[in-house]
Figure 1 (tube, helix red, strand yellow):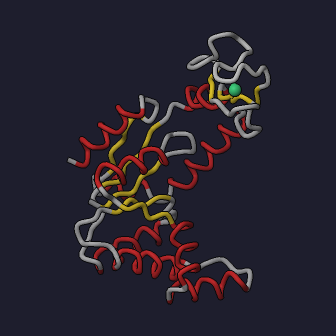
Figure 2 (figure 1 turned 135 degrees about the vertical axis):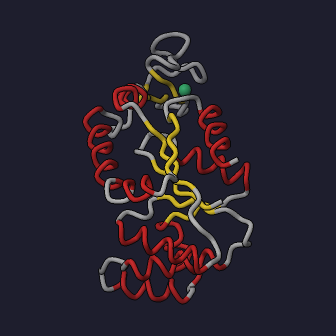
Amino acid sequence: MNIILLGPPGAGKGTQSAGLVERHGMKQLSTGDMLRAAVKAGTPVGLQAKAVMDRGELVSDEIVSNLIDENLAAMPADQGAIFDGYPRTAAQAGDLDRILAKNGRSLDRVIELEVNVDALVERITGRFSCANCGALYHDTANPPAKEGVCDVCHSTEFKRRPDDNEETVRTRMEEYRAKTAPILPGYEERGIVSRVDGMAEIAEVASAIDAILA
Ligand SMILES: [Zn+2]
């Protein structure tokens, strides 16, 4: 199975990817990670990419294609791939089809973790943590037993991440929609897009994904 996992920040894409890797032995192919690894290992594509980046230029689609090709070629044929953050353009989607075919694979599913933006705002803006021990809390879903006191270390100091505000969440959602707009319609036409409720419990989302892949 070769899949693309889509979802806005906060939808749980990282958690679900990690679950697929653990449950099904799939490999997550994230462009940034592959690039860093290739540069570090000094592979042919890594050296090519490093030269470009050292000149302060952006890595081209061709280099990214070669990078994915290099990674797929090194994977056992029966190991599934999860693409994350790629493709972002219709041209890259075409590239991905060609690279997969070259490696005797094809794209099986595009799974989108759907979120309700208002619920996502509540989920994210309600997060806070103990400034002393780092214990995680949520205003409504998981408040400390005694208001204003950490359950774990009894500290009364808490902190919130500056990014966890409504404006940032809504902006990221818009960016996500703009980013997927060029590729989703093409995959919809092929009938390979499945949507999962990303606001459900982690285990429920995982079983919904497993049902799609079964
Ligand atoms: Zn604490």
